[in-house]
Image: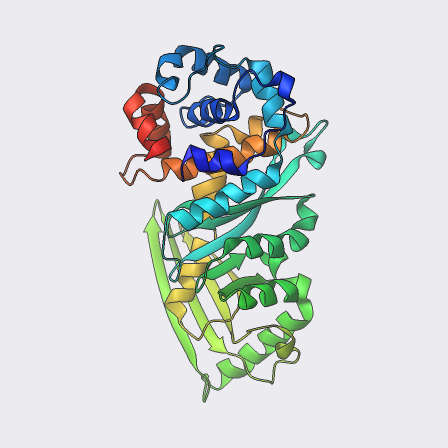
Length: 367
């Protein structure tokens, strides 16, 4: 996706008399600054001054580079829905196969965006492709408790088929299951006591099957063992087909199987056990379900950790208008751009390369 395409999506919020810098110039400065590690408006203005010669390869900057006040106002005034459209365009232009993908849908709070505390901070729901390492969609949720209403909107934005979608237990809702199935995808969703009736039914049915050795029922088992630093962790996944014995099963669109995960941790001789449960629209395949369950948390390391540690997302100092939301969305988009570099360099090294090397920065921006 080119910067020209982004400019065609984003509507300039400024009045004519205030448009000393063109829309393209502002977007070029902001995105090239962020992929180079400059995240605050004053830092972006400094970057633009230092790199004016390079920037003029792509735009005239007839009146000089934009001031930090101009950049701040622009970030606060852009309509976020236009930036959201950029993710959709990006995913459609890179022509990737999502049929074997695990797409993690999860929320993150931008803690520094709150006026008084984290309670009024902005919360963003993202759809993360574990296979390709990019954000496919991102949308603001009015508080963490509103995730249930926002997740279906995120699913509507994706436009992918055949993937397996995952959420945490909060997303285990009938409406979300229906939305995933209707979109042509599958799900593996953790179920806890927020759906206690169905969970109790699944546990009782599993106990019944266990006593009979899963006789006459399709099921699949898979086990992983991890060792290191005096710790041994064994995870056993059992995915089994659900029958009408489980009351209320038909109320959940596409619900075919359940997954029982039993974890045993031995830490220097001290043994701990725990179990968790999942519902799925997939046929029994313990190994694939194990992959989906483990990869769900890829959104934490692949996206949320990078946003906080590398892109300084939680330290957002913008509080006006759409500023903190827009800045966080653009950071996600810039991470997608840097993801075009398929080398084994860390995200931090890619940002350092973009800061130092004009040719590398240009390649990330323009292909």
